[in-house]
Image 1 (tube, helix red, strand yellow):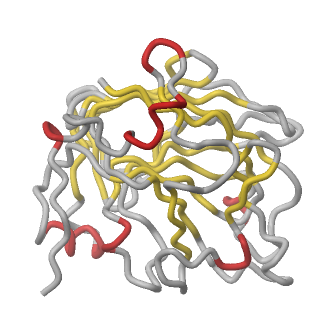
Image 2 (image 1 turned 90 degrees about the vertical axis):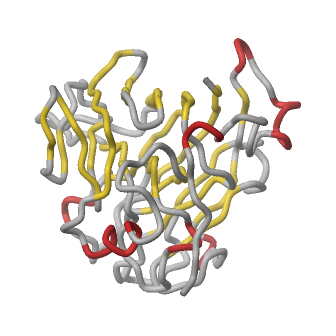
Length: 261
């Protein structure tokens, strides 16, 4: 039986875990750049149907100082090839900030809900634990959405594939929870920040404003993928991998920085 490395909140970042190669990119007030703006060093792709590390069709690439997620090598169809770009080390107590924007057109066979839809996954299962054909990543997703020409569509939402959280003292089991953010349309850059306190409070901020918070991330024992992980990990989740999501609409990420706490 395969065993996966245990993710334990108190020891993460104790020795600058995962940041040693990026110290020369340190910016103001303790923030450290974990994307160098030139390469994908320190990041590993995983796309449904392909092995960990296989960057099918150059889905994840670097151009003009940004990580670009693009599907120009996919041919005419997306075929549910959901993807994630994992940072090299698990994290627990930290702030993460970046800027994102949606560009271009969605793949024509992708579902409507995935239009201008991406995310930053936190507290997720280790990338080594994904099967080749696994579609969804067990994690807390900071869902990033672009707005239509008219109407409201919030961003910085919370989606919970394979997990549950606590909000206002109550266990929340619904899959997606809207934030109170404004709607951001077009291809404008939007600034996102996540503040993570292990198994404690997690806060999403958009352009400097808190838009949603929750705590006590935990595996959902009713979820098939989560049940496999419960065999190896505690039910309560204190940390885990982070990744950028590929979900059928082109999106760019830049200025990706971590501040250990």
